[in-house]
Amino acid sequence: MTGRSQIAQMAFDLALPIVTPMGIDLVDAEYKKEGSAFFLRLFIDRRGGIFIEDCEKVSKAMDPILDSQLKVKPDFFEVSSPGLTRPLKTIEDYVRYCGEEVEITLYRPGAFGKKFQGLISKVIENEIVFSVDKKEITVPLTDISVAKRVIHF
Image 1: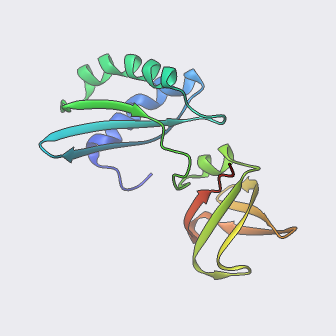
Image 2: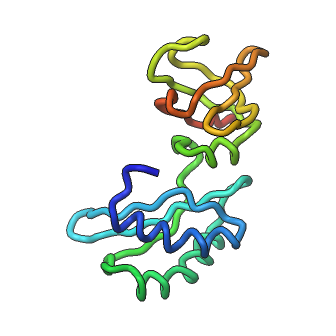
């Protein structure tokens, strides 16, 4: 994933082999200053959702690793769910939410305009197949500006 700071990427790389065997997906990491404090956050997810116990388990597993291997010491370390409507960014995100409804915004208008809703049907390499109005369309990941899950309550 692009856009991570060097520290966030280092934390992500350290966490990935620890989190994956737990059956949890590591979806992002951020290292940023808020006020006078520096926060390191790991964002975890899995189909069916994340519970506080999952965050605690990852936090306990990662604390000693980050303390010994991360070149900076953040003021605060948190493990969190990225939220229900976070943007889908990676191929893994689309695979995780295959069969679910999403709202898509493209960089340029396509067969269904620039913005549409549909189900994620399947993922083929770097292309996402959406079911829209009983038709399937294939969109390269690089053509998608924003994709968010549609949550029905």
